[in-house]
Length: 172
Image 1 (spheres, rainbow, N blue to C red):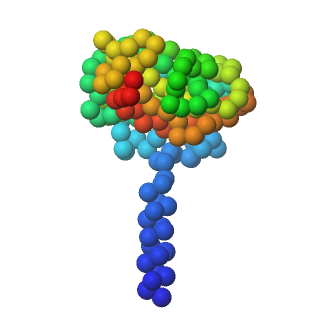
Image 2 (tube, rainbow, N blue to C red):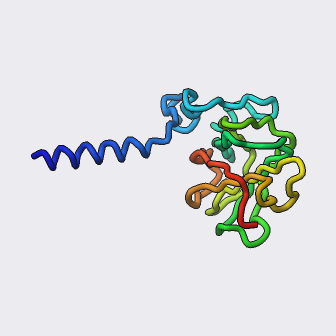
Image 3 (tube, rainbow, N blue to C red):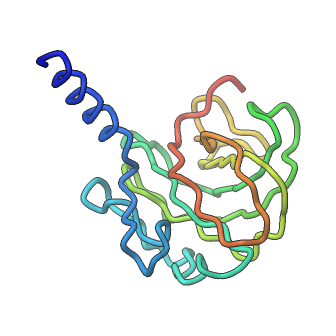
């Protein structure tokens, strides 16, 4: 009996650790809400579209999680789609470029794109180019990159991607 209790407790802790912190109580859309704002600050820069675009057809929305040790000044944020990762060539599509994003260390930054007209199955790849960083490819140790954990299917319906952790670019 004690072994059964320990097994159940271990499973509950493991499953609880997998929770993504998304507030699912927003207007019936489990992905329309912000991440748990008690964990990190949510950027509210003027370049970020209103959250209502996330309910529209052909929208792609989600958050990137900016590292607390982010160094430098962000120059641009590029959202691309790839059919395989790590990338070995140009993206299948560049769906957004945000110049001068108001990204700060340790925050979550909303990505809201509409229209997103690409259809198919892709990885979402995000590059944060810093001042003195790369143009078409991130520079190792200067720029930041992040990728969706799995391929996602785009079919024109509103889509919310899971939070993407950004990390200092390496391996370039």
